[in-house]
Image 1 (cartoon, rainbow, N blue to C red):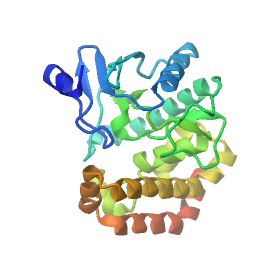
Image 2: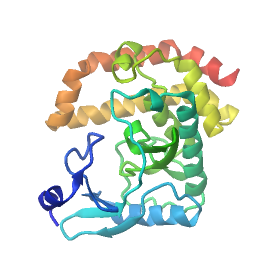
Image 3: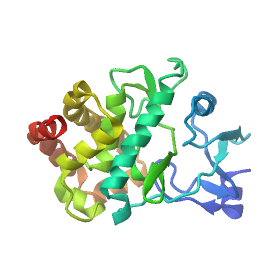
Length: 271
């Protein structure tokens, strides 16, 4: 089945920017473009289930035209501007709990360093387990106000647990310039307090807490480089988003804000 056929017969699923207009639900299955490392990624998803992590889609098959089918996970997924229910402290803590569950299972699975994992959001230092790397609201399924499952593992790559927490922090605290954050996260959000809640939910060690603020700065640089590559390639989705969301000046303000408040974040995490 082609993407056009899927569009005709299935329900288009919205959310995210990488596969806009190419993800469809057909009954109990989701069909989407297969990443280049789909076979390795599918094997990892199946291994996660074997190690007790049942909060991710189950791969079903790869199609002849370069798409993949996975099981549909029912629940609520938030889209920007994000509603209140996904910004509660309970929701935030539950994201940390879910990410820790993922890492516990991932840590028991041997990672093939030659499997062609995505380098887009990968930890520059590498690491012992396969991180999700894109735990944004659009990739977390909620039930009854708590994070219940993770979807879209396309950006998964070997890394350190603290790197995956840093990536998640960018989206969930959020670790963004407050003047911009308010447009996507309505309401006044206390970034240091929310960072502590996420870290507590995950159960970060004191050493990882000390590393987290600087790791968030590094993760932000990685995400900016990803956007820059998409813009340089002329991707219309990213060109439009960059223009609509304040251009490169917004990224500059966020990085300056992170550096200026590094000690404040560290104090909130370690007190």
